[in-house]
Image (cartoon, rainbow, N blue to C red; front, side, top):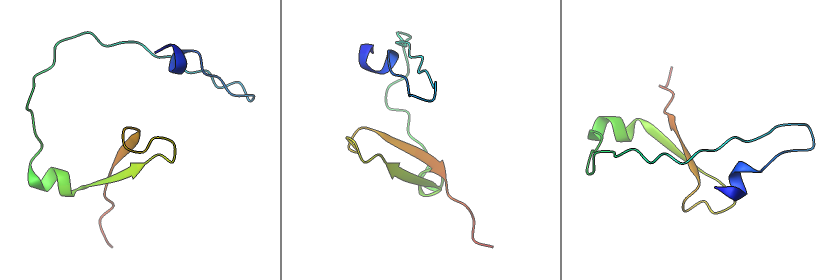
Length: 60
């Protein structure tokens, strides 16, 4: 939290982070259709745990 919460860029971007201590349901899974509809975009730095999930753009 401290590493992320204190980050900033030279251009002035500041990062705000907060720990979410709420209880969340375990074992909730998306359907096969929902999962195959996502693109996993891994970050170059620690991509095993730092990634974005984006919707797959349908072919036109």
